[in-house]
Image (cartoon, rainbow, N blue to C red; front, side, top):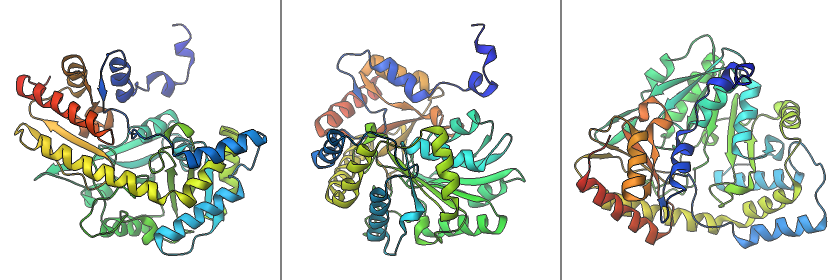
Length: 394
C-alpha cells in the first residue's frame, strides 16, 4: 500500500469500470446469462481468420508501418467509398491496435493537463476514463429522457464549452442509449466547432447498426457533411461490425497533415499493429458486407424481441433504440444501479451493466446488450421478467 501514493494522482483515483465489476461478480455464477458486455455472440468469420492465419504462418511477424500496412489503408478507403458515396484517400486512415488505442491516440494529440472535452451522457465510460488518466477533464452534458425518447439539447451542449474546450465528442449511434443523431444535429455540431476552432471527436462504430425508418443501411455521419481535411477525427474499430472484438484492431480517420504526428504517437504507444491481424482486416473490409447485414438483421430482430418482452412492465422506462445493439432501461424506484445489477445477478442469474457506469445521467438505468443467441435472449428476458414481478430495485 505504500506504493500507491507514489503513482500519479489520476492513476490513484480513477475508479474501476462498473461494467467490469459486474462482470467479475457474474462470471462466478453457474448458468449466468450475461448481457453486460458490448459484443455479439458470433465468432469471427473463417474467411477473415484464414487470411490472418496464412499471414502468420508465412512469417509476417516483424515490425511494420506505424500507420498500418498500405493494403489495409487502401481497403479502408475502398470500404468508405463504397458505403459513403464519395471518394476517400488511403492517406486519411491510420491503423491502431484497437478502437480504444485510436481514442487514446486522438486524445494524446489534442488535450493536455486541464483541457476539456464535452461529452453527452450517458456515454461509454472509456472516453472519460482515458481523459482523466491523461490529466484532462471530461465535461458531461446530460441528455434527457422524455416521452419515451432520449434527446440532446444542442444549446446546452454548446453552452458547456469554455476557453479550455478542445473538442466535442459525439457517439452516434450511441452506446449505451441506441440514440442516433440526425443530420441536422451533426451539421449544427460541425458549424459550431468550425466557428470556435475546436475538434470534432467522432465515434461512429455502430454506423451500420441502424434501424431508422428512412430505409437507409447506415446512420447519418459526419462523413456526409464534413471535409476530409477539416478539424475532425473519427475513431473506429473492427470489433463490432465484423465480430472481431478480440483482435484489437481499429483506426483513426483524420486529416492527412496529421499523419506524421499520429504515426509518432502510435510508435510511442504500441509500435504498430501486427501485420497478420491486418491481413484479416483487409478481407473483412473487402468481403464482409454480407456478414454485416447478417449481424444487423439479427440485432433488429433481437431488439424487437426485447421491446415486446419488456413493454408490459409499467415500472420500466425504455426507449426503442434507433441504432447500436443495446437496450437502456430505467426501473422506477431504482437509486443504485450497481447494487441492483448485482442483485439481479444473484437473484435471477442474469447480468446487466449498471447505468451509473455511463455517467451520472445513467443512474437509475441498466444497459443490456441484446446481440446474443435467440434462446439465451429469450431465457434471460424470461428470468428478468419474473424478477420484475417479484422484486423492487435497490
